[in-house]
Image (tube, rainbow, N blue to C red):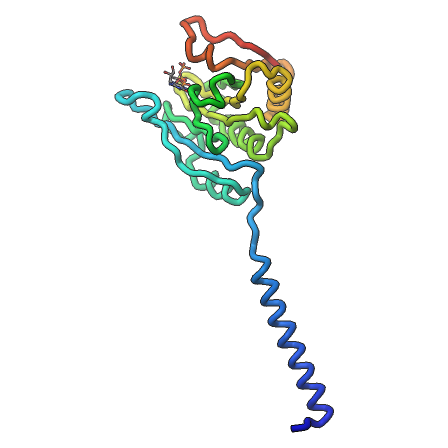
Length: 216
Ligand code: MGP
């Protein structure tokens, strides 16, 4: 059947509208919403002190994440560190590294340690821990981010601690760059000194405390 020219135009218009709609559908299908990938996949661990069990048995893997969105979903879902019971830890480590001295990637490593006074729990603890996590997942340490293993927060009645763990105490350039950048990112004043300690020294410490291998 031949259409009147006006109707032929209309039919062509309708057809092109249909084509446009279906191609738009295709675009929506082939371009689904994408989460923003992180450079690394990370694991969150939780430690709850039960004195009847050996240290390692109190450590639990909670979950893994590798996108910005999943990080925030997790961060907003879990308890703030300042609300944890004393004796608990969070640890966030690169996928495949366990948050303990014995792991192959930690055994020659050490930590930049931030020690906090009891008063700082309410004022700075959560802010410092969030900044620490953002340094990790945002790969804030430039070429030295490879040396990063993870970070730990210890909530303790005697005073809380936050630390960034690196893999090699002998890699002075990396350790110092990480320490300086970390101190800057936390906004610590120049006069505050933070120390880097080898895990080997922490694990075998006597009553005298652990010596700093580096300070910034
Ligand atoms: P801690 O939890 O790191 O610090 O270590 P806390 O509770 O402030 O105690 P302090 O000794 O630093 O004042 C407490 C204890 O947990 C250590 O003495 C070890 O017995 C054990 N522990 C801690 N870490 C991180 C490890 C680890 O990586 N491996 C093993 N085997 N034990 C650990």
